[in-house]
Length: 363
Image (cartoon, rainbow, N blue to C red):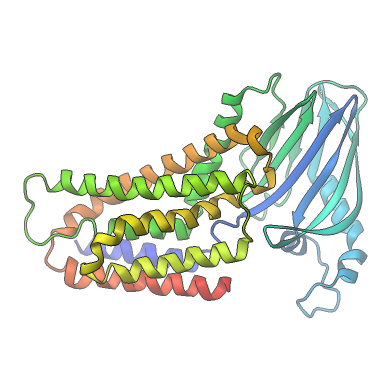
């Protein structure tokens, strides 16, 4: 049992040391349209990613001005031109990057560039990217390609740097391509992982030796709570990713951190255990907006349902995998005499402190 306690403590410290902006991610958005042998569109790059890859802070005051960004625009454009490669039917295209302008995505500053690629021929579109992948293994490029009256979607990542436009806009293929993204965003979402842990901690608490049916009762209780959480964040994920409801990113991330603090403190009050179900649903609504931040750049209305379905399926698969790993470790710990009076309060307080740190950072 000492190993179990040390393991969970180490896990909490690892979460505390990890990035506080767990669901913001590092994301570039590439929107293209194919017309005959020309690809045209725009690329939106987070200003914080641009600043990290190209020195723009000329006066060294750690604050970027538009004049500094403008004076360094050729370096940024050159980096983008070197990081992307387009081809059609296997024949490389010539890329041109236009002048930048400032925009926002979910309240964060982005630098936008017009992109044009002139290709010797038409045919199947292939997009390759190495943008920021060498320095940030969490970076993703979310792309959309409008062609022939339909819109195709894809993702590029450090382990999947090339996207080939499918011959047909098969919904199942689009959904499948985003399952992995849903899984990935849970695994790098340290705040989400910590919240899942807080759902598990009070569920396994019971004094004394194992009793018949204890595991089944705990599983049913967790099923109800996790289902409420799942339904809630699925609702807001769909509403936000299809732009029916839009909220700025910073308040959402701050609300997620606040939900961790509240959930952690509530585990310290046994009399409030009956509120776990409605609270899981309420906090799930907030977390859904957090997951939607990963997809909002592809907000395409009703046409995006395969993207949403695949991403949401990936989120749920990752949730189940996390629970499947943690539950066997927590069940025997929950029977120990030290768990309720010592381990549960200690882990809850540690989670509250971590959540409070994230909250301060995000505000």
